[in-house]
Length: 71
Image (cartoon, rainbow, N blue to C red; front, side, top):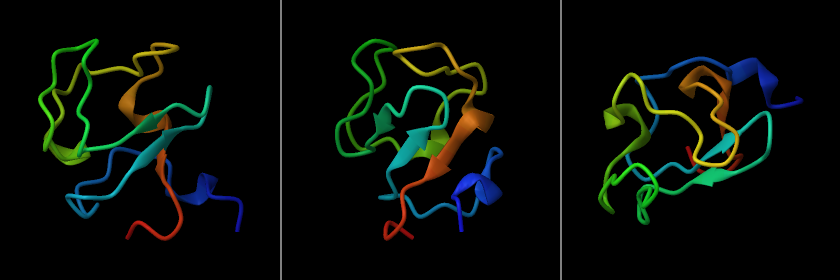
């Protein structure tokens, strides 16, 4: 499994699941939030604003995939 099968904005992702950008491999960790976009720690990926993008490369949420083992 390449990991690309789970591309898309998923609502079934566990609140603590870390998500990885399929473009630049930046990880969104809900425990840390996103200081660039002023997303507070504890914000699950599914709760990110619809217009949130990767803080490193500006990829849209649909380009993120769940890191294996975080489900």
